Amino acid sequence: MRPLASLPSPTQSVWHLGPLPIRAYALCIVFGIVVALWLTARRWRAAGGADNEVWDVAGWAIVFGIVGGRLYHVVTDPELYFEKGRHPVDALKIWDGGLGIWGAIALGVLGAYIGCRRKGMRLTAFADAAAPGVVLAQGLGRWGNWFNNELYGGPTSLPWKLEIHDIDVVTGKAAVDGAGHVIVLGYFQPTFLYESLWDVAIAVVLIYLTRRFRFGRGNVFALYVMSYTVGRGWIEALRHDHANHFLGLRLNDWTSIIVFLGALAWFVVHRDQSGAQIYTDARLARPAEETRRAGEAAAVDEAKSGARSADDDTSRESSKGVR
Image 1: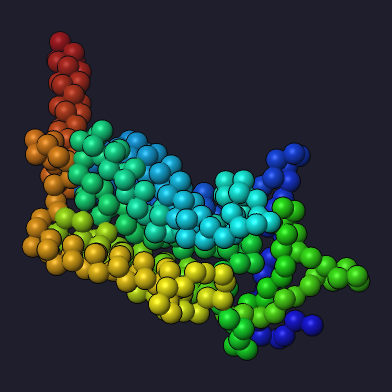
Image 2: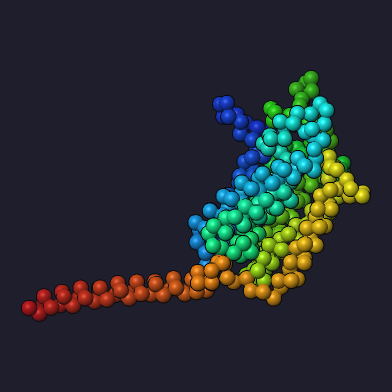
């Protein structure tokens, strides 16, 4: 019997549209990417850029990011795929879950760098525009883990404890007992929810801070990295899933520490540098204020032109009347 105070988990993570499997994990990732693109486009436009530049760079970043995320997961947990009795081909089945955020960020940044170079854009400016969207996408993507009944914490009796089932990764359905009832494995810390809420909070704070303060180039992205690693550190300590350890800490904890220190160093070094210029060629740079003023001026000119046309028409009609 389910306790009165607990969070339910889905008993199905895959639906079939004819022969095509629709996986909740993939839908959550895709939804997060769409939201990130929308938010990044708004921020890039406000900085003086064009929407099409975001789509071009994002294409490189998304492909590289997905590959990097999967590589990090497979490399840091090779026993899941290459030990005796395992199936190495499963390492390619990204739809079953398993994306390492650090690999996704590392290769995603590389992909963004390639895209920015091709468009004559500054990577640091694009990274600052994308940072809130990226962390928001992470928060939305975590709900894919909820559908898969994975990445939960240790057993708990908290009112918000998470009910976990044994989900078959192939069929996407929870196991049932002889009476047809879904088998409940237990109640655990909902670490997916903690991280999702933390990520959304970071996105909101970053948007607020960038509206109030001016940061050095790349420092909005550095703030995102530092904030995320702090949250990931305490959430990682709660997680109960398989992980390799080094010197008593989970591997992701060590990665978080190293990445945090790198982001902190970048933030300190670049704290006094302007991040306004978004193109590598200064002649192409057009700050947001200049773009706004140019748009207002164009609107005024158009209004004046319309007024002059109306006056000319009135004059001609008046002349006809005089005649």
